[in-house]
Image 1: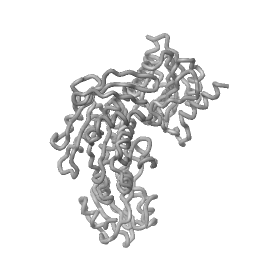
Image 2: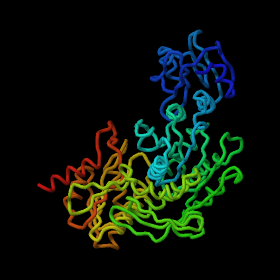
Image 3: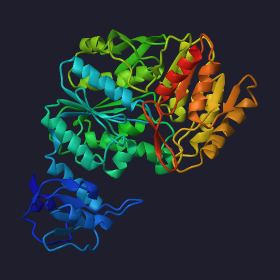
Image 4: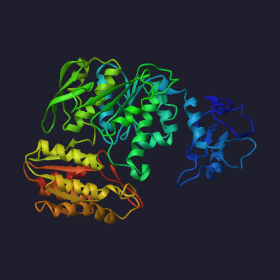
Length: 503
C-alpha cells in the first residue's frame, strides 16, 4: 500500500482538497470495483465519464478521488485535481504496484497476426528450459497453468499492473505478453519495462482507429522505442524483427539506441538474417524445417502447420535466444508444442476430411490460412467466414475477394455483428466474392447469415480429402449481437455438425 501523498508525487497536480496523508488500499477507474480506502480515478471515455460516478465511488468507501473537473465530495474524501486523469493513472498505477515489470523478464510481441501463437511458443520454450512463465494476451492470462480471464489483448494499465504484480508475487521469471497497437497509443502499457520486443507482421486491420497503415506502423514502433529507451533498470535488451515484412524498417528505426537494445532479424527469404528458416516441409498436422543461426543449421520439427507458423516460431526462438536459452534446448522444446486454442485448431471426430477453426479475422490472416490449406490438402477448400460489426469496413470486400480467390466453396456468414445489421455486413463481404466470381466461374458460394447454419452447411458439403476452414472467431466462445452476447463456439458447432453428418 502507498499513501496518497506518495502517489500524487508521481504526477502533475493542480490542487488537492483534503488530507493527502491517507493510506490507499487499492486503485481503480471502475466505480463498481472501489474498495474501502481505495482511490477512484475519473476517466473520460467515448461513452462513459467517470466523473458521473463519483457519488457511487464515495458510497463504496473511496478515500480519495482523482478528477479533472469540479466534483462534489464529503470533507472526509480527498479530491485530487489534475489536468489529465488518464495521464495521472499512467503515472501513479505502476508505482502503486511497485513496478512489477522490473522484477521479471518481459518479452513483448506485437504485430497484426501471430502474436498469440508466438507468445505461447516463447512461453513453452522457456518452461521447457526450466523457467516459471506467465502469459498475457488475447485468449487469457496465465500464471504457469493457472488461467486468469482478460477482456482486451492488452488490459488497461490498472488491470495489467494488477496481473503483473500477482505474477511477480508468485515468482514468475518470464512474462510473454501480446502488446496491441491500441495499448501502445492509449498508454495501457505505461510504466512497463520490456526486455525483448518481437515484431511479427503488419497487415490491414484497425484502420477505423489508426486511419492509415503508416499510422498503424508508427503505433507498433512505440514498443521498439520503449525497449531501447534510456534510464531503464534492467540490462540485456533485444529487438527481433521479421525482415520479410514491408514495415520491418519502421520497427528497426524505432530502436533508438542499439547500445541499449540489440537489433536482430528473422526471415524465410533472406539468408543474411540472424535467424533464417529454409528447407521447409508441411503435412496437415506438422512442419519440419532448418534454421540457420550463427553459421550452423538446426533441424526443427513442430506440430504447427503452415508458413505463418514458421514465422511465429522464428520470432519466439529469437527472443528465447536473447534470454540465454541454448538453441539445442529450443529445438527439443518445440517438438512437443501443441497448437494454441483457436489457432489453426484441428477438429477431429474421425471424419474423412479436415476441419480447422482459426481466429483469422484480417485479410492477411485469412489469406495465410487459405494458403496453408492449399499446401496440406489435395481436395477442395471450403471456407466459412465473415466480418465483425463496428470495425474497419474497408476490409470486408477485401476479405470476400481473398476467400473467393483461394477457396473452391465460400460460405459468407455473420461474425460478431455488434450494433450493425448482420445482413448488411454480409452483403458488403459478398460484394468482394461477386467480383471474383465473374472471373472464376468454378467458384461456388452461398450467403448464410446464421453462423451455425453456415458451419453445418460447410460440413454437409465436405467430401473425403476436402478441408473445411471456419475462420474469424477461433477461441471465442461467444457471439456479440446488437442487444446481447450469446454463447457460441465454432469448435462446438463443428463437432455437433460432424456428429450429425455421421448419422
